[in-house]
Image (cartoon, rainbow, N blue to C red; front, side, top):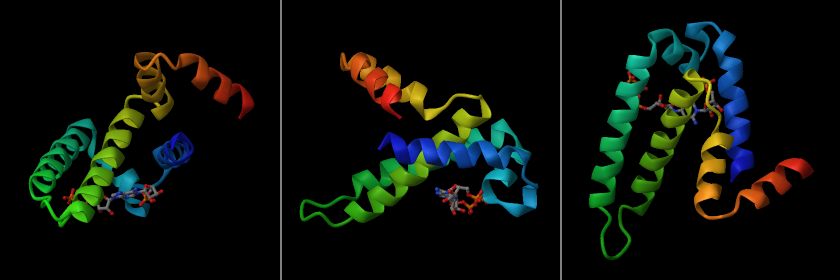
Length: 110
Ligand SMILES: N=c1c2ncn([C@@H]3O[C@H](COP(=O)(O)OP(=O)(O)OP(=O)(O)O)[C@@H](O)[C@H]3O)c2ncn1[C@@H]1O[C@H](COP(=O)(O)O)[C@@H](O)[C@H]1O
């Protein structure tokens, strides 16, 4: 999972020097942090709505997965703007799980 997040984070870093009209992420950076935070809020709201609409028979699961991906993506853009990478969030989650050693070992073998 963190491989996908790290690859996406690399792309988000690369977009920092791209022309705003050449990419969605570059256009978000150009609009600034407030616009990015607005998008995170919007995506969080859409995710909550989608979760409320998941039925007992599993209908709506796909919509929830799609909205959660949008939320994670925009959260990564927010973090990138503030020069925080997904590895820092993963390390914090690992620390809470008592798995810090595992992450360090994985990082050493990369
Ligand atoms: N993972 C994503 C990703 N997820 C969601 N989105 C975009 O996020 C937007 C969310 O949809 P909305 O309807 O809320 O937004 P919108 O109507 O387009 O924008 P607003 O006018 O509402 O601000 C859509 O434009 C999606 O295309 C993404 N855009 C890019 N990526 C990845 O980011 C990387 C860089 O992308 P580019 O900047 O496009 O090169 C690539 O690896 C992409 O795969």
